[in-house]
Length: 427
Image 1 (cartoon, rainbow, N blue to C red):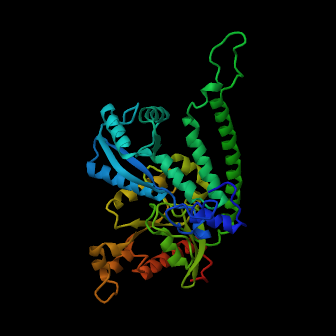
Image 2: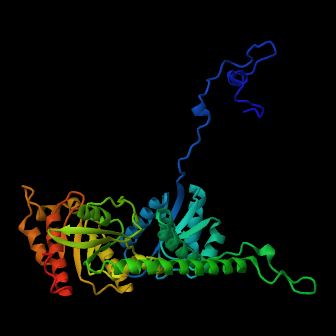
């Protein structure tokens, strides 16, 4: 478009659209072009561009290829949640990761060929890479290198909405970044000694490291204040029994939270849809208690996130009862249960009383036939789970929710009677 275009002079603008005209007004082009509307002229595409990635994993000794593929499926889901797309998967059988480049030299050349052929934007590894591995891989592949921890941190940063969650995620990112600062500022270093050749005394990478440490100290001070505020809030809730929803990410905790508490907590079929703790008062019969929705766990949860989300995970450690929600339709749900139990042990909540809630039975025909009869009523097989620690439900289709409410009522009333033996007017 001409630089002297004036929107107030519509005649000139129309002439520039209709075609070039000579001094007598004749149109010298092949014909009048289509006139664009103001909306068409000022329209820009804001659609996010999906970045293309290549997934890499190793199959160590004692692990099957099927299990490795399942791990890569989860990594691909993480990538999809972050807004990317996986074009290729590479798996190598190794007893242990290579200390220099994670994979062997031959497999590294294969990854390089795939990267060039598919025009890959970055490569993701299904493990946490050491700083040395990260530098070597960037040098060899000449592209962005991400590991599982970086991807999870990026999703947390994308999902964070409140100032508390943003502070927690920023602290985790800086703690992860600190030992992995690359040498990008060598032009500011001292190249050699001698009179008149001494540098300023601090390289740029050292300056960056010092600034990150100062920022980490500031964020920790802010989180200490947040922890104190959360402690005061929990102290005001001591008169009621507290129940916390825990489980692997994307198993339906927020959907169950909305169903039991009649609230509108954000729920979506994505990993880590909920980062902020939500507490709601629930009344079953005449018995009130507090129900808490917490952040979901995942296999190989970064230690930086466990430390940063201390105030959030404290809701789990101080709860009186845990509802461990499991996606029973997932083919690897048993390992997900083990991952959650390990995380609970890491934060000191392994000794809490737990009710196992197997969710999404509507996706498993065998479980549906066991729990729901032809007339839609609960079968004896479903009712007997009241006597055990497992309840099979479907939060989406509201199957066996009454059984879950009855079990919650029994457990909460038992805890209430132990804590307040002379306060029995509630039930």
